[in-house]
Image (cartoon, rainbow, N blue to C red; front, side, top):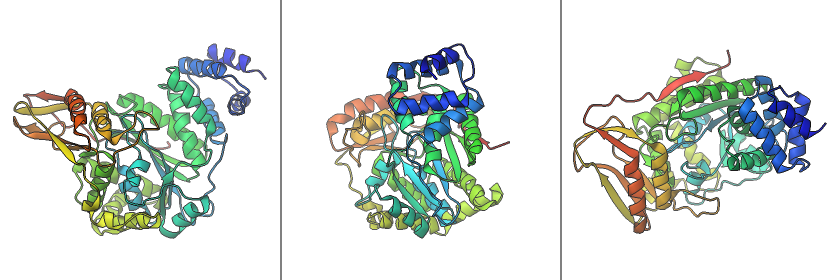
Length: 435
């Protein structure tokens, strides 16, 4: 079998066999296929697409290209949640304690932030002493003990994805649904959970800018997951506006804690209840309405907040920081952005707001950049809100006040105003399950 023939076949728009796809993945990881040949096939896939069978085979081959996590020693139904990335997306910090408090077993590996999107691992590391690196046994033992563990990605999970993604990023083949789906789902399959709930973001702050694109991606990923024997659900959620009011690491942890106390803003709470209830339908087999009430109950009775404290304590963090969020270090400087006239906020470019937070020190341009955990943005008004001239619409936080000029300029570019009232956007567009 030759990679030349496989490239030629896909370039002509023909379907690849399972054996050809597996050969491509394994030989790429082994270093027997040149980067320019990998890129040629990825480009051919980008132009000509892949069938559901091809995409599923590619994903499973990528998942099996390195380490896989064996969760069979965990007593109970293991369920994972994955977001395609967004601004202000701290849902893992809220959803996973809710599900664990209600009997789900959440053994989760999360990533770090890069560019305009934040990372769950970075947010957790803003808590004093919190460890995101555990041994495999400690990871499994903690899930068995308290039902919840969130760590950074470890080992050599889906090395084919790492190789392919780096080449896709350099050759303009990132925006291809079969390649996006296989990238995301290969890591989820390798992570081992029985159930997977996907939070597929759509809008200005998301990778997929339209609802139609997001639904196409979601359907592909649900098909892959179910074909691999995993119970898979996808929720299409709005990322035209930052989720919640906080953007930045410790600021988002504080907002997550407030949400678990029952004091969360409407949009963040709504999305978290939607995600948690879909996870709980997989865990319990109960209907959606019942699971919604269960999720709300775990917030109301404090059990979800207590589960977050348990996880923080088990992973070396100081649970007092969850009990009293005033213990989080505060940025030395703040800067208020005010409305220049009376009117309504008619649009917010979430990606630009994410970049503004990055410019304050809350994000990374490269993996080597050092984060300022206390930097970020608190939104005081969002799309659809009426504002008066001189009213504060956002407060920027940083430990270096010279960063306010560029960050405030970027933030102002992100916000549009209108003299006419603006209709609020939906938060949840659709839920996709196996037919």
